[in-house]
Length: 96
Image 1 (cartoon, one colour):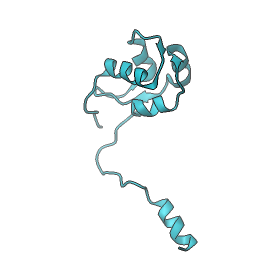
Image 2 (tube, rainbow, N blue to C red):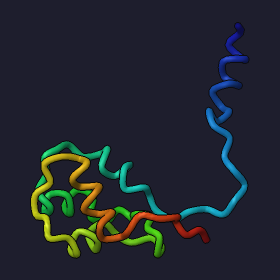
Image 3 (tube, one colour):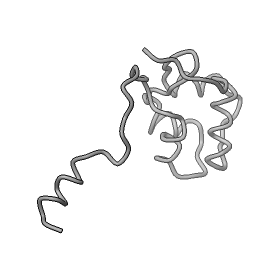
């Protein structure tokens, strides 16, 4: 395999993207993956509070969503994701 073939393969996406409308924001799982656990709510807001999250009702900032939770300490990533999903719901994400 030549160097040119390797470079061409690297330029192509591993998964072809669809031609549909863009979705604004990041999945909550992606934001949760950037953090280490356990975390206090205030520390999450400091680190990722300005992150825009995809929700069924459109994009919202993580700090807004966390204000609506009663939880102040998340012992695991799953606890965090579930708390945010309890606020935003679980359903299809709106596109532009």
